[in-house]
Image 1 (spheres, rainbow, N blue to C red):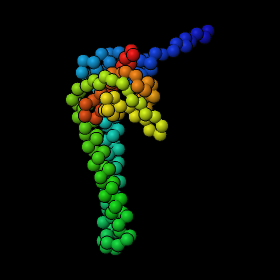
Image 2: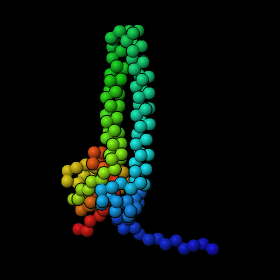
Image 3: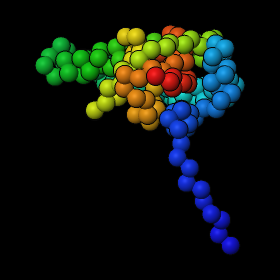
Image 4: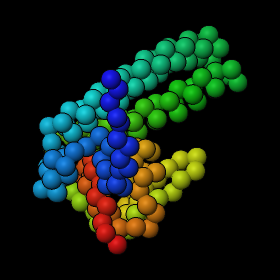
Length: 173
């Protein structure tokens, strides 16, 4: 016997909670300025993935650095040695920026402190998606951003240094 499936439409708040993979308990803890253990676990997984990215970038830079030194030793400073040196330098700068961002994010997760920002959400979509409230830009998943109504009031709960969104509450206009 087949069960009848109920097709219940979700409220905007429920859609946001689903997109952010959060529960009412998470929102309650975020209101109190805390991260729940489940949120912390999910965030730590994101930190680990970013660390893997950093390690892979470092391995690439090491190989490129060895190649660059080899080209310099063989040819000296010539037109052929400048592109690998430039690529190595740009790669190194990108790697340093990524390390700083991941460090800030990791410290936020470790501290476990949550801040709140209330105001009109400014949502920009197109090739990239962005979310801002009171001229502060937040880091949120695209699937959450597309569920936030542009220029409607929301409360954003986020990590203070990295501006990573933990939860969002829809406010009644």
